[in-house]
Length: 249
Ligand SMILES: N[C@@H](CCC(=O)N[C@@H](CS)C(=O)NCC(=O)O)C(=O)O
Image (cartoon, rainbow, N blue to C red; front, side, top):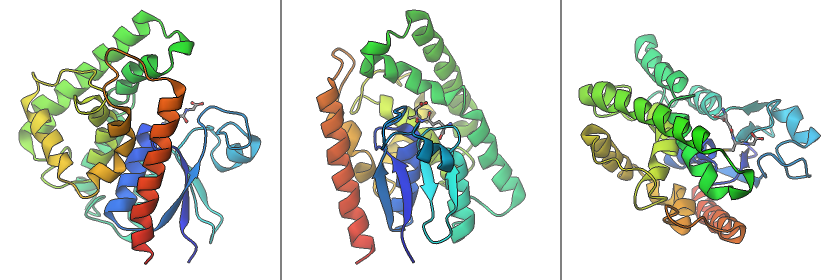
């Protein structure tokens, strides 16, 4: 069987969540470097990429054996879980699965707005208005308050007491803001969320899946230049490849 392909770069939040799932499940895959937003040959807006994922965003999955392609991080994770029978991560029981799906839907325009705080630091050239940044902070804060006060007050993980793809999706966004990574959000008022973050650190391959963030480090004061981001992505790419090589023997 030819390994599946994942198009993307490790700095992308939904790409990281998909990669982490594949590492946890030890499924060999090929990570195909793809520049988000670029119309160039390896870009997510190139016509050949749009054939695979009409929205022109990363991540995107491709199965060389079947020719099947799929975009959207959450759709990819749900598909993989169903295809390979990873029912621990995406339960078969429809009520339990409903709770995972609740989060996967809730995530967008709530938790996903974490990236609305990261992007202005990384892409100074985009001149993202202060108001947009403030709106992202407010939406994100309301989102994590919901997780902290409701979901994580009742269960160890977001959709109950077991780790699921809801947690991997959420960590892609929330995790990046922690003080050992970009350090651009204060989680101290959110006790349950902090406990969850610590639990997520214990999940297998946490460090390998997040090399890009440890390489990039604290960006709260100084924005990294493009070379630093490129190097962080390359080093993360190598770290991920090294783990995957171990799976295929
Ligand atoms: N809803 C999509 C969002 C994907 C997304 O926005 N990816 C970014 C990189 S993190 C991207 O490809 N941006 C390029 C663009 O929007 O043109 C998902 O969760 O997969």
